Length: 294
Image 1 (cartoon, rainbow, N blue to C red):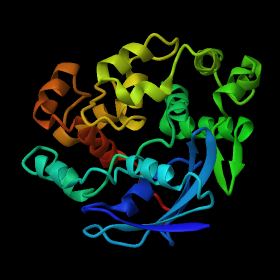
Image 2: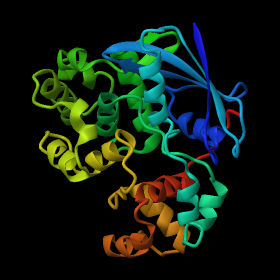
Image 3: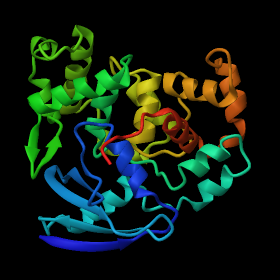
């Protein structure tokens, strides 16, 4: 086993990151030891890393542990992007200091955009979560992964596109997928293994090109594509105006009698660019149920 220590520029609140990750029952989070297990595919090989925080918000540092020396450097580079260690958050915090979101940003200071661990699982999760309340969405995703995926070193890996493409709609309906959602997940997987959709090139495309590519896939609309841009690729300027969570957070923030209109959301968010993704994250954070596991 190898061990690597990383120093990151603050502010960075890993405890709040762990709290948000823990909302997903598939995440292996240990609040006491401040660790999370991270399942990754590096050059299509599954590896599991353990990330442990040993610093504080202003001087964050981490200990990374893994077994495969072969993929160590590539795995660490991927971790830096997943946990947003590669771009300091101070500039983002300053941007919102004079905005309507200043109190939310102060309360959740140092909360980074943490990416899903690979592109495919991000898209599958987005499709599963479509038009479901968050609790059941997590439950359904957990059933899917634990039924058809696999566990390694205590961490859960989503089934591969090859595995999912071979599933029958009835198998997914048996774990409470709708017929249509089952078709979407299987169809997405077929598109990937047949070479019609290459997720690995998405990082090199513009936001609009990613959007245009994804919405051609059956079952992927604007909401799903925007979430992939945000939590798959980590793009900094996404504001999914159709997202119910963001609408509810704005309703609470501004004391509105009902959810804001698209036009109102456009007006509210004008001054938040070019960091709309952070506005989205912190608005979600402002209404999320706090973890009781600590």
